Length: 377
Image (cartoon, rainbow, N blue to C red; front, side, top):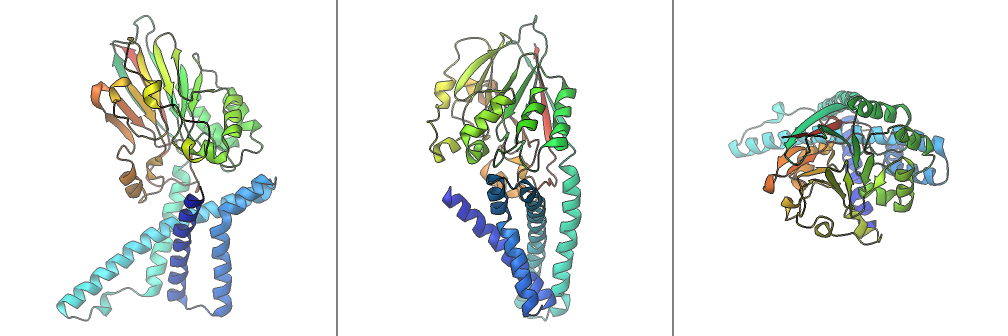
């Protein structure tokens, strides 16, 4: 956990330093203005910590204010840095070309102010659009015909939500909007594939009540994600159960007498010294029956024996949440978002996520609620 925090603040601190260098090059501010800028940037850097400490000690108003200010700033800074880096790389290419051909390319290079204002404007536009996009939940539909679905059962509709991140920024009306999408889908079964919660779990009774209003015919089921362990697994389990979900931690349940629904803990269980994770192979041994098997697994990682299930539902990647950082997350998770056909006629669906982590922004990675219709073949 300490290493994770250290890595985050080194990288995030580097972006703040990059922004400071850009401002200094563009405007050459005097000493007092530089000190003020450093203090503001330090506040932006420390905002996530201030949010968590404020939540822990019950300063809800401060936590809310710092969440909105700090995480919107984070989204803006990410977009600004990406755009500025592209321009700087272009500038470097021009310099190198001039060196190769022994030519003066100075007149082709933009000024320091242009190198600041263009990324600044791009980040404002992309961030504004991303704030809007984060609330435009799309419904993704998958239909799976299978001989394992009894004809007398007919269509069985499963609705998947993932990475909701209920917390300071995702609650109240924003959470209600997500659940309206779920209600409109008329699920027989609702599944949550991890990261249902985020951060300190204070004053969550209203959010739990909103979830309890959803009463699918065959129930609601959830698995842990990494944020359940970051928030505190005991508190997270308490919230999930109060929200009306059956938490699957290394076990299998039979739904509608026709499908087997299995769930495994996120690997974060190993980092947080929580009770041992039940191995996936132990949860899903080789098939013995003829029921349709679904594996709920937060991270889109596929075990060596994909033939032990028919469908895996995952999330975690957010599809990068803010482009171009999807290019980075894709390197770590080749099963990035969407549908993937695996061996043994199994299917993996990776949700883009329903909520947001950190910045309340999604840029070219719209949120989703997924409808999976299992129908007799």
